[in-house]
Length: 146
Image (cartoon, helix red, strand yellow):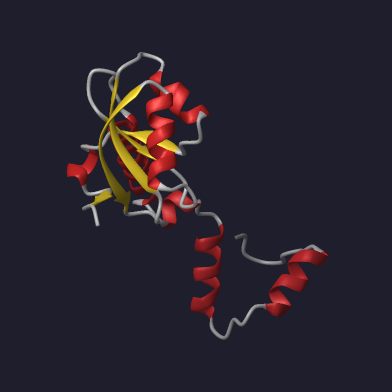
């Protein structure tokens, strides 16, 4: 800021009239904070954002990495009964292994082996919400059968 006479615009005058500045030290804090970017005020922000993106990326890869040689967990909506879900799994070309529940809701989850390479797309078209890896996160996304 230049010493001496300072010409302020009308917008700057209104802003200064609304500011609660009581001493000269308040002026320096206003001047120093005005020119800093978000990254200068929060230096850890870019690292935190990248860490969370990496965490969610790895979690997504772990959850949806399904192989036709291994069993898959097929999650159905809450309104679907176990027998209807069983029929949908068999109709899509899968071999049902066991039934369980999901942690995310009261939907039926069938653990099924893919007997056909098109099983995953067929079961989704039959009404399944998600086809996921049943061993993801140590199987913690599934609840023991009732």
